[in-house]
Length: 224
Image 1 (tube, one colour):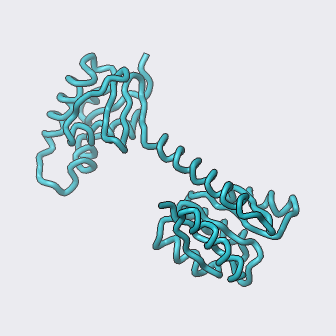
Image 2 (cartoon, rainbow, N blue to C red):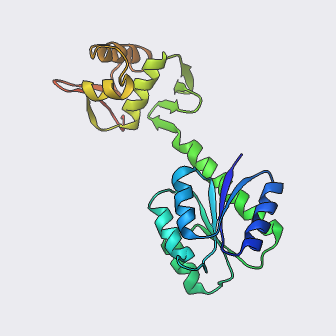
Image 3 (cartoon, rainbow, N blue to C red):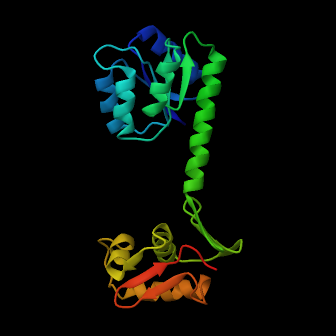
């Protein structure tokens, strides 16, 4: 269930927006000022934020700027301000869209759903890493080479994910070990063992995983 933060000092409007979205299956949280909104986003992850501009003490534009310093979820202004300058300022500081008061229920729902779909598509794309013939899906915990699934152990997957996430960078064995094994028991020599297993399964020609002698390994960004 997507969670939406509504920030508006007009309580009746905030409650109306909340009721509309709850009827559509969304979870909502209402805040009536910028300070409590900032505290809320520190404690709770949101999928979208609906934000009024004209609020006392801290304006919506100031709040939007502060939010953008912390999170990147969609921010939509719901405001009576219709001037071009207001919109340009809003977009400049990080807003994604404008809904003008008064609005219809259908418009509000359609805009909210569109932004959440876009956010979800973007998240899905970011969770898939593709380099040359190799594709790694973080969500499904699967690896493909030339669209054929390759069976990897959990540790092999985690090593490959770390290498591909940092493709193009020379990584020491210590960096790989600390990232994948962390505080778990193990010896740093196990890194080389898992690299050997990965090469056997997905990179027998060593086109992708290069040894950096005296340091560790590098996953090549582009393969001819």
